Length: 411
Image 1 (cartoon, helix red, strand yellow):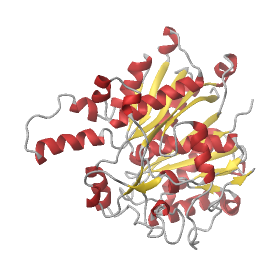
Image 2 (cartoon, rainbow, N blue to C red; image 1 turned 180 degrees about the vertical axis):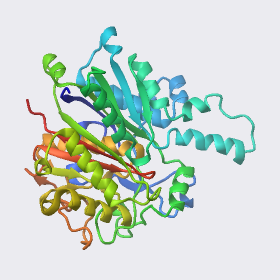
Image 3 (cartoon, rainbow, N blue to C red; image 1 turned 90 degrees about the vertical axis):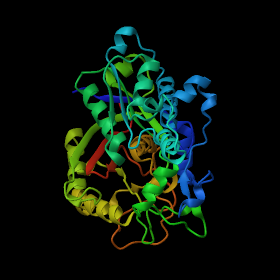
C-alpha cells in the first residue's frame, strides 16, 4: 500500500475561510455559535447555530448561483481552495485517475424546504424546475467533478454525522491501493433551514441557550451539557500518493494513515461503547500503529448526555490506563455540529494541530463530569501537546462509526 499525503486544504466554515484563519480561531477558542436572525427563527426554542459568512454572488455567476443550493456553493468553493492550496494542475490522463468523495447528511436542505413551502404553504403547483438538481444529495460532488473535469469515481456518502469521515476513508483506500492518483475528499452541509432546525429540535438533541453567553451553549464533556448545536459549511482536502507529492515538490500538510469503520446495531440513535471502541481499534490496525503511538484524539464530542459518556468509556476501553494521559479535543463547542461535513472539518483541525504542535481546547468545560474524567484540554490550547499521531472520531445516527488515523508530515 502507498502512503497517502494531504497536499491541499479548502474550507468554508463558521471559523473562517482559510486553514490559517480556522486554526487560529480554534486555538483561541473563539465560538462561532450565535443567535439566528432569519424569518421564522422566533419559532425555534433555542435559535442558535454556527453560521458561515458567505456571499455566493462573490463566487458564482447569477445563473449558476441560482442553480446550486447553498450546500453545493460551499462544496465547490472549498474544493477550489483545496486544489489551489495543493497547486495541483492535472493533465487529461491524470484526470482519468482522479475522483471526488464527498459526505453530506442532509443535501440541499434549503432548496427542499423552499419547495415544500411553495407546494404546501402557498398551495402552488409551480415548483422550481431545477429543484431536484438543487436538492439531490450528490449535487455537491457532481458540481466539483464537472468544474475540475475529474473523470474517476464521483461518490457521495450519507451516513449522518460520520459522512465526511467515511468519504475521506474511502478516498484513502483507493489512493493507498493504487486505484487513483488524486482524490478530493471531505464533506459539505447546509442544514440551517427552518424545517431542518425544527426537526432537530423535535428530537430534543439541541442544546438549550446559555443565559449568560449564548455562544457557550455547547459544552462537550461538561456535567451541565445540554446537547449539540448545528453548524454549516464545507471542508475538503486533496489526497495523493506520498511519492507523487514529493516528486512534484508539493507542500505536505500531513498523512492519512488509516481508517476504521464499524456499525452499531443496538439502536438507530443511541451510541454504543462496543462499536466506538471497535472503530478506533480498526483505525489503529488499518494504520499499522499501536495504541501507545497515539498522541492525541479529536473526539466526536457532541455535547449530548449520551455521546460524551459513551465516547469516554470507549476511549478507556481502547487505551486502558493510558487514556487519562491522552489530550482529547472536542471542537464542536465552537464550530457547531456540521453533521455530514463535521468529520472533514475536524480532520483538517487535527492536521493543523499536529502541524502547529498544539492540542486544541475543548471550550466551555467549566463543570467536570465524573463520568467524563479524561484530559479534554479544557478551555485553553496546550502548546507542544499534539505529538505526531492522532485519531479523529466520528460517530453517527444510524450506527456508522468512522475513525481516521493521521500523522504529522514526516519524510
